[in-house]
Image 1 (cartoon, rainbow, N blue to C red):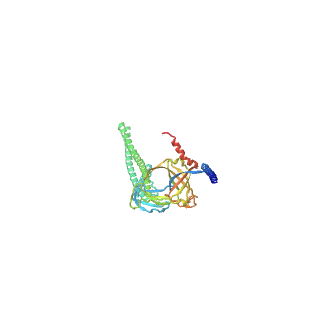
Image 2: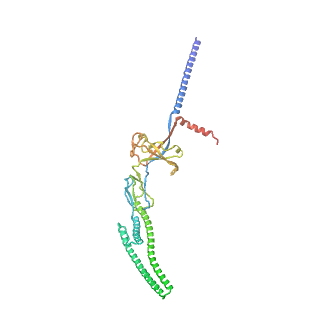
Image 3: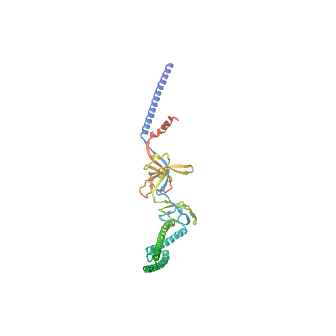
Length: 408
């Protein structure tokens, strides 16, 4: 009896063991199938699910017309400064002035020279044309009227001198003509020789030549002086244009509405070098764009028209969201810039953010209006395309295989 009970227990244990083994194998099979199905589903999903490819770059908000650099063209002494850092200015507003004393004196000197030349030219034209009096400009300045009086007196003096010389020479011609007439009368009576007649004729010719020569020399000298004076007037007029431009450049004005920044010179009476920067004006009403620096390794995928996502650093992305934009410009060549980390090589890319209209503020993806100012920094993601998740996962494997089966 004890032996039979022992056999029954052994049978129960064996049956229980078989049942447990069956259930374990079935659970394992279910698990394997579940893993296989999950893996297969993931592979199928990864083959069709697409993710965006993007080029990341850092950028800065700038005005489309760039910052206006106010600088001294010719240098000088700072006499007036009407603005300070952060002031808002309007188009045409005077920002600063240089001391105009030296420039105005130089312009006045050239102006006086032009006035004198204009009066001299009027006199010389009257002399060459044989006028009774010079024709000076009717609407003349006080300086020109003074010079006109001087040239008028000189005209009369030269004219009287010429008339006196011509009168003397004409008298000599008349005497020579009378002498020739007398000699010719004596020749007919045989009292003088032919040689005497020829001598008298030569004397008349010489007297007439001196008369004509004096008149011609006066005209030639007047024409030469007129040509020289006109050349000098042309040169003086060009110089006057430069002098007026220098006076104009001594007054610094804003080209458009904006905000003053980087005021570098604040000492009245300070001397400015030619080309020295005084301040900058950040345009206020111009359209804002983002200027990004893209690495040369990424530039092949960046073209005009690509969409971009902009995350402005001053606005928390989790609260304000991002701004959509579009690539509007890609530089044709690389640019180099010295930084504390060394020389940086990059391509310049412009992204124009989307706005609801001209002059309207930027609206983020969370429908918030953003008060964007030039100088703000941003992170840009330029969408260059998309690919499947499987391509993304297999990329490291493909790269490893391509690099592994190559000889050195």
